[in-house]
Length: 132
Image 1: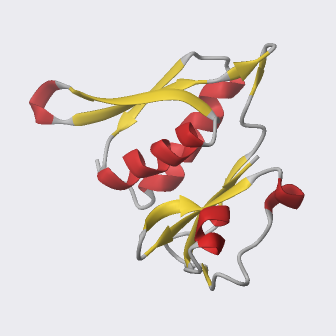
Image 2 (image 1 turned 180 degrees about the horizontal axis):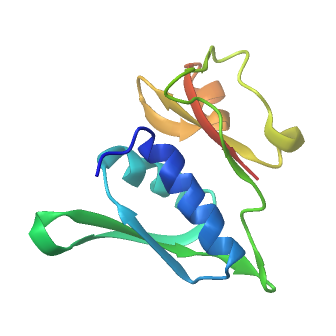
Image 3 (image 1 turned 90 degrees about the vertical axis):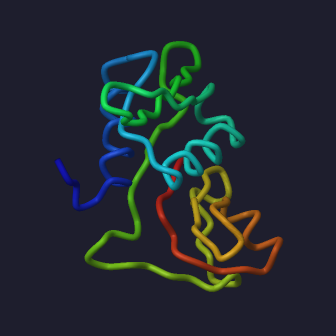
């Protein structure tokens, strides 16, 4: 089955799993999804992630979700740039999410990183999603 927006699917699965208080969520893996999961782990939004090989040499990404006193650490995760409408931003005009309390995940020529890191490195790119 092919998806028109695999990143949107990833974010929806994370959101839905947290609504049901699941400890883990499993989804089809790709290098880009792994980089997004790495950013979420480094920023403390998830506990850990790993890739597993399932039937037919298909890789799956398993994400361990993080909770704080029973409520999810990720309060809101929202897709910004969609396949039908890509949103790009320069380093100076990257948005501050929730007055700096949240992060925007940005795909830059130097890799996938947070908006804070992109501002420090003075590099812009496509705003993938916002998390807080």
